[in-house]
Length: 319
Ligand code: GLV
Image (cartoon, rainbow, N blue to C red; front, side):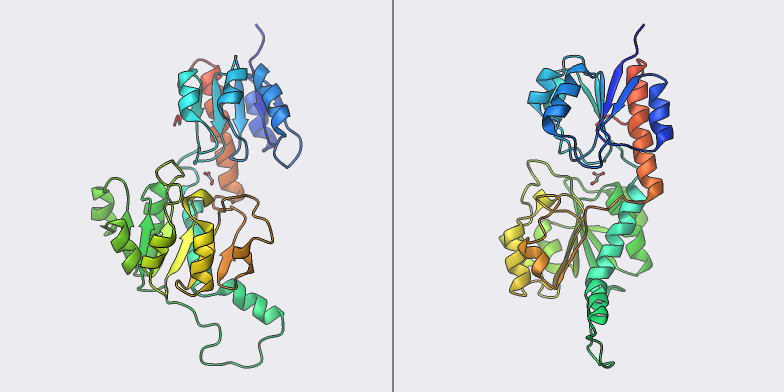
């Protein structure tokens, strides 16, 4: 019996590819840039399984052409790059990589919070540029972290992990979510509030919600105008959840104090993007889960989902 065919859109650890090769014929896109659309479409036509990244668009056109396809394994927890409804209609299983990246992403979110609030990147640039002439009372002064109020929008696993870190800094943690999370309230002492109240009262606003039709553009002119002039806005979800032009204006006009952004509407964000011209923006290249250990765990979980489904078993983490 011939083995099923799996196409991987990026190279990952060799032992993970080797594990897949035990059950499938595997081909890997060899370059460290997204596979061209035309190549992906051609490979998808022959594939029983796809191992994809958030840079690959799995839409109806691809799914229509991929007649043999049984599973799309996304090496990411977010899956806004995949038309899940179309996949479901065609009987194609979609899997993601929850849990394994929770703590690494929460670490990064907290690091971004501190770097932005305390101006670490700006201060480092300032020193290197020779600007440091003397100690001075308000030199590179930022916003306090310890004891501040953190508002988390989108309280899932990562939100809870951030809240645990925030408790170590004695922060007052508010959250907004589609559904209240009573267990998190009991165990972490976080408090549910409506979005507007969260925006009005938080010193740090952290966006962690997945990108869906409901959350697209969730933070726009109106929402930014509710925030304090000293507020720090942080986005570790998807760029599409924020109106970047409105954010630029709010930062430029000092209606909010700073922003820390790990994600952008267009990625890679163009280096001449207006947001990158602002000193009060800390910008990162979408590295929320980027530790060696975590990225290996994500790749392994995606591969294990493929192995399970192609061996006739249930997927481990279906979406
Ligand atoms: C990264 O953004 C992910 O969704 O895993």
